[in-house]
Length: 157
Image (cartoon, rainbow, N blue to C red; front, side, top):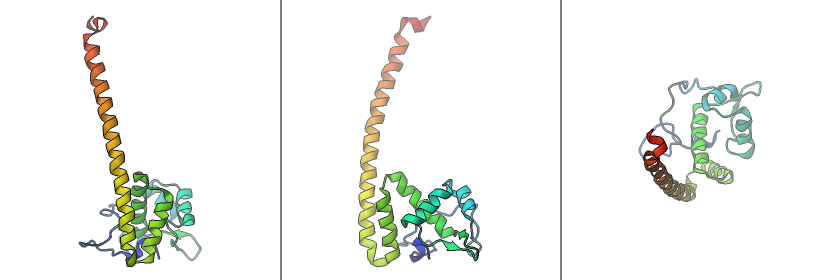
């Protein structure tokens, strides 16, 4: 069982889907057994990172082959897409692990998941506002230097 096994695999309104539409390079469900090196190629993550995600509880239930090799599925790739997005938000790893635990616990944790994601969204919005302010300062400085550069006598020759 993977972290997102509690969610539907079909895309319907109100469904808790973890990522956007599947990438074209993925195999059809039922034939979706990927080795760790294939997942490295598909995601850009390192094998070390994938193993670490398992160790800390972000992906605790990766299927194994009869020889013990990890076998990832499309739903695992969807989960990795979500984890990547959460990392981009700046969400602490502990919060990502908590979110994964809540997903595994089931539907009764929707409220707590909602609150966790809502708080993360507010943090992202605050960071975007800070970056927009910073961009405005840079734009003013760039415009100042662009205007000043045109007026310099040494530049006219």
